[in-house]
Length: 185
Image 1 (tube, rainbow, N blue to C red):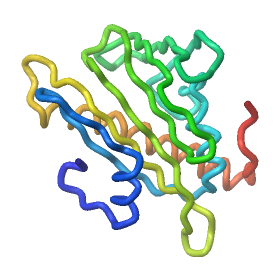
Image 2 (cartoon, rainbow, N blue to C red):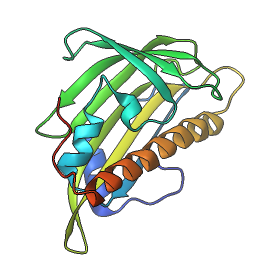
Image 3 (cartoon, one colour):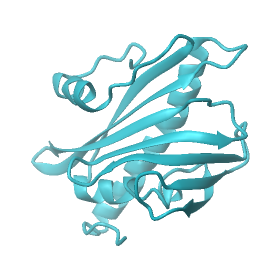
């Protein structure tokens, strides 16, 4: 699931518990991890904002939510130039503030990521005696005609790695600035 990267026992346990995708034929799936030197509540305050993915996702320029911000709400996302898409329509499938888990499914847009579904979880951990966070993001998606399983996974993993790096940068900057209180809803 992580294309050659081995997971620690703790990471594998979280993936088995929360990231159970059931890929069908002609779909690929993977999971990626990121260790962040910021408290979990601060990282979660960014991740859980279904209405503001642009707070840490560098390819999102604008987001408008339809609904009450609960399960089933839909967001229309505008994607910055440079990617092979300009819009994405995404539905909130799962949001649990106690477990720190967010699930999103792409339901439309001018991209090639058909039947894309992702889960992101946030777990507290220690970094040399300081509060840190383990973030895991997993996905399943159709392999488009003309692409291989590996090509599709590589493309999606590259986007997720970029998002996770940005999440770490934003969270760690906030932690250093002593903004350890979560972002207000």
